[in-house]
Image 1 (cartoon, rainbow, N blue to C red):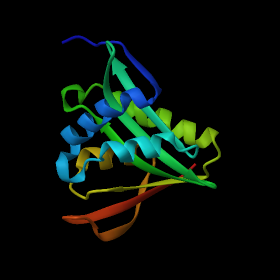
Image 2: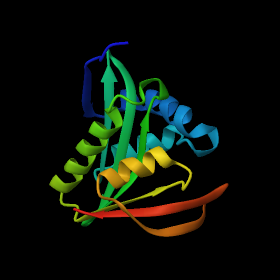
Image 3: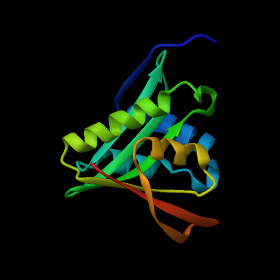
Length: 149
């Protein structure tokens, strides 16, 4: 399959159902966000939510919330059918740059210790493990990772 052109843009309410599907594919039903959480987070004035679209189909999403000078990455998901194409890297770069432009001095996120591909991506962007959050998820711990902007 050749490289398909993609569009990286702000998420709209029309994209929420696709984001829910992608989130479930990536994280399973237990950990995936529900539609109402995506809608509420995306519509907040303090949030940045982006999607990647290929041929009119949303195939990735990412979002963060800003609080004063700090930002929390809330989600990053790329449809598994599109893994390995650099889409997540470009989406994450755009999210970080947008947060910086909107005044964030540092950004943090939580990630499962077993999610090696995500951890490698975050480390590529300069995130470092700051701590361990015991029982953060219903069935396990999370690593707290942070980066100064």
